[in-house]
Length: 182
Image (tube, rainbow, N blue to C red; front, side, top):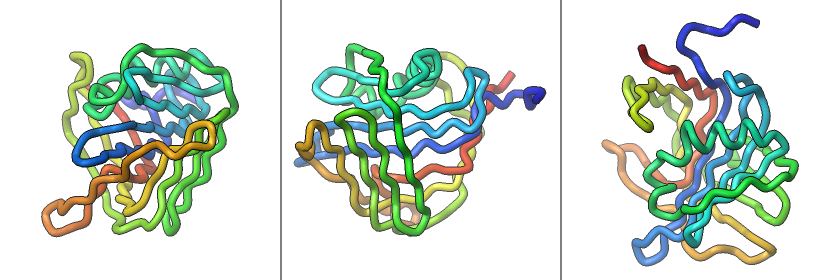
């Protein structure tokens, strides 16, 4: 398949930032990559306690997702740190009407109670000095959790009002397309 002009990734990227008493405690970035310049695959990136763990079976894809995207998300800056790759199969189930479950090794990320469904588009997002365009179908969720070694991490998604529509720091983002701008 020939590359679409400017398109560098097509897939889904649900995310969950947990907060407790207003402070961020952990962030998960789930990647279901249908196509990218680094190949297809799944990755689960968890930032907590000053560490960032990237789970997946394709180290090249995981590192590309970290370096190109997740490392530069504000949620990662608040909770992550030293980066490490963990070889593990990632399973992802997304249901726009119910939520998501993603797992890898000893980590489970869950989102539930979708609040809304809308199209999101950002004409310009700068990540590491590179300009991108992003579009997706955005579904904020009322509930979310990150479990590690059977223990649920502290915190919950922050709920908000986005111009009269519900918002959340726990969300599904599907039909996602990242493009690099010239």
